[in-house]
Length: 170
Image 1: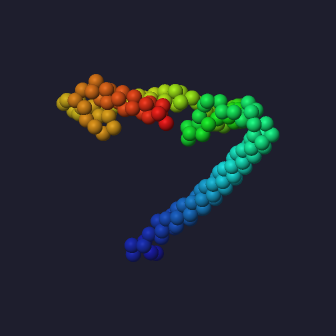
Image 2: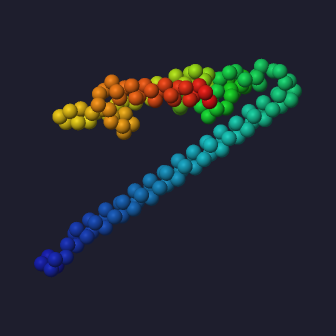
Image 3: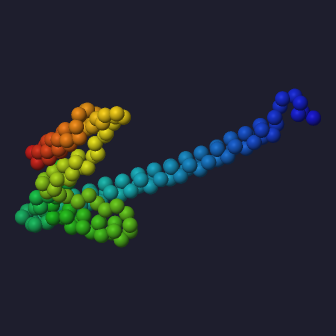
C-alpha cells in the first residue's frame, strides 16, 4: 500500500534492528572493559601491598641484624635504577616460578649495568633501517637520510654505542 510513496519501512526496520544490536554489543563491551579495569586495579593494589610487606620485613631485618646477607645489595639493578638485595632476589625467583606455573609473564629481573647496557645496545641494533627510493635507493636511520647502507649502519652503530655508554655511566 505504501510502496509507491518512497517510504522504505523494511529498510527502516532493519536499520533500527542494527542500531539495537550495536547498542547491545557496545553495552556488553563496556561491561567487559570495566570488569577488566577493576581486575587490573585489584592486581595493582595487591602488588603495592606485597611490595610494602617485603619492604617492612626488610626494614625489620635491617633493625634486627644490620649485616645480614639478605639485606645487602647484590650488585644488580632494576631497569628503573633500584638496587637488588638478597630478599628481592629470593622474591623474584619465587614469583617467576609461580608465573611459569600459571602461564603468566614473569617478573622483571635485576641485571648488572653491563647487562642493561648490552640489552639497550642490542635493542638499537635490532631496529631495521628504512630503505626508500624507486630509481635510486636511499637509506634512513631514525628519519635521517644516508646515501649508502653502510652510512646508515654506521649511524645506527654510533647511536647504539652512545646509548651503551650512557647506560654504563648512569
